[in-house]
Length: 114
Length: 111
Image 1 (cartoon, one colour):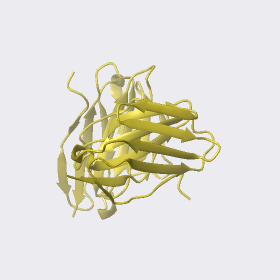
Image 2 (image 1 turned 90 degrees about the vertical axis):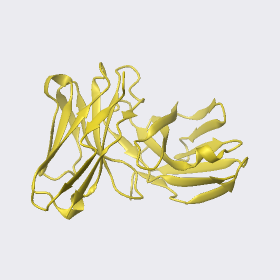
Image 3 (image 1 turned 180 degrees about the horizontal axis):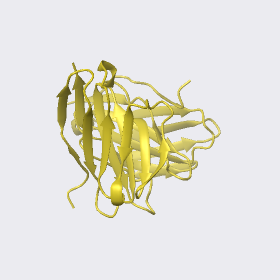
């Protein structure tokens, strides 16, 4: 088990472009979370999946953001029409059923919007 | 008002000192309280968790929760330079559908 992986690790894009990030959780972890973290701040919750169902989504999340977790395995986070304010580290975490307080974080995808 | 407040520091201490890190929160429904450590350009890693009020000890680390005051603490004894990192508190209600993080306290332990 190699832990939570995220791809790409870095992404530079121009304002207005769409970007998609991928997260592969630890196998058999049915809970998956996406967070956004900016410099000097803690992770900000974006959305939560239990298996393939998206059960929670931040009210602060713009309609430009969408996430999927088909078949309850990997997940993707898409940002449409990126803005400079979207520049941040996007973190994915997974946790097992029964020990749901144990979030295992991936290394993150650092997005820079120019 | 943020759900979770944490002093951003930075906090600089000499090696061997006792470190006290704190968070306050406003939502009385929080039941699970976690502390994470985050090194630069890495994802956070879980250090400790506590359910409801009380103390929990793990090696050099002690976590305390006072639900009546909505205040949690992490104590690090005999701090080491390798403890230099950002420490994040996090909280959740019973169903773990959402976690709320503090802004993090940056700790520097000087040799």
